[in-house]
Image 1 (tube, one colour):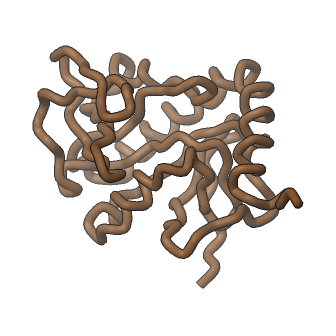
Image 2 (tube, helix red, strand yellow; image 1 turned 120 degrees about the vertical axis):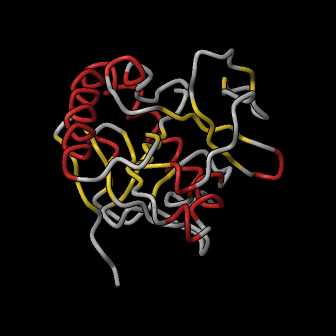
Image 3 (tube, helix red, strand yellow; image 1 turned 180 degrees about the vertical axis):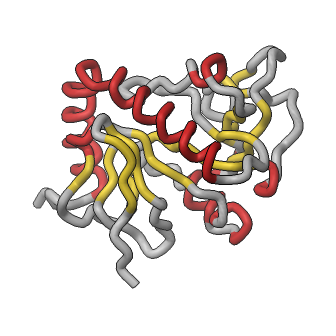
Length: 192
């Protein structure tokens, strides 16, 4: 019997949706992300880096923020055992991380106090901030640490991938603070 609410089924369904709608809304999402970062920079004391990601197929490509914003940018690097670190994205050569994704591995590992905001890719997110990723648990492991969890973290994806129904989750899943889509910035609904 197929469980239509399993993470694998939901991943498959939302990947199809994301791949279909993203080409029409990606530029709008990037505009909303840029607006949100500008607001964040004027309302919060910038303490360090903006964490973005190197896009995989179907993810919003935020790499242009490196050129268009004055905040320094950091990229994540996956490591063995599901660990992830952030590194400054400078002009040094990027190398493939544990999963073959370009990362600034020759740069120092950043600490939570070096970061201002994390922007994270997703396949989907629900109203309570639970993200459906690829199943590696990298962001959950990172954000399970109190210092990393204190850094505001927003998911970047099309509106069509924001589920009105709760997504399947595990006990170790950690909700994100909100998301940005083509309509703007949204906060999660607190369940506590």
